[in-house]
Length: 449
Image 1: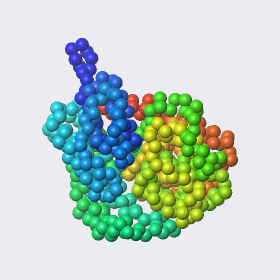
Image 2: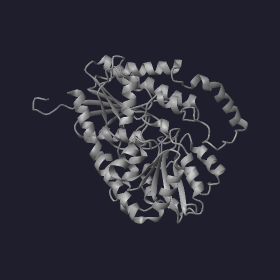
Image 3: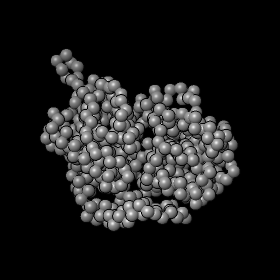
Image 4: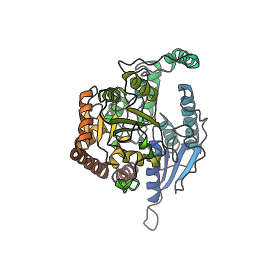
């Protein structure tokens, strides 16, 4: 406290590779929390990278004005075309962040996200140099667990043969095959053991772990707690969207792309966002193949590791006319895209439970879209559907259930409206900034008490 009885501004630093104007969900979450803390009187710094989640996604764009001090580190911005290029960006940012935090004046709290993986090490280095500092690990995903469980899934879904590459693509694939034993991670292997040791070292020095759902918290604490059974304090705080951004959502004009003949006059099932290794394409492709001439279109807007696999699988299944792919769009355009959809689709691999929490859920709820979820029970999406009645939760392989749910949503306007109301209630009560940010206030206050 100051002499006047007012609390002095706390020095708080957030570390994340992405920050607005980048389109990454973690960029906007970091900005929402940073600006909230700054608005409350704290002295907030963000340490971020110079390139975006999508190649070229930030370059040349003006950064929005903000009370937050933004420190932008140089990275080679090599993109995601290969593992080596991605690692180069990760390692350069991790090194730069560690150096920057090592030379900063002591912070009261350093909040480290998980992009890139292991950047919490930079926060721990700062804590070692400044003993009164506190470290919060804000986990968006879990490494090396993600790579161990999902990293080798580069082939198509069962029953779909991915076309063999030719020419330069074949040459690149041969080199990938040679390098795969070097860069792949096997639980219990030397690389995995090293990375797990880094996690355990960091966890012993973290003051609070913030996970996105109970499954993630259990995975982190069980996997990286001390040998004597001690665990760092932890909280579950789900991700969110800004409520003000979705004010008047019912009045938003649908996206002009719905004039496309492949989408016009159809019931649209929307998948919006990243289609990575943790998001299997098979359920959607199989359901689309079954719903021939049913007036249903499956719109995928985004990108990711399984983007090309989706196209090939759709073609092999004869569903290419019903599965429409569009690239990432500006964040402002996502409201227009959701305004024209009949429901939202969220896919999660069984092995991804606890490793990641689909961030697309929160915007879908804000837009009042009924949720069709195919994935394991116990995830954040499954929990939201069970608690708020905002959609249908199906297990992997239940193509019959997915087809039946799509057909009923298409035909039953009253049921669709009921699920839509549940989605809006879920957003207002649990997944908007007004619900989540007070939980962060309590978390920061707690580590400093």
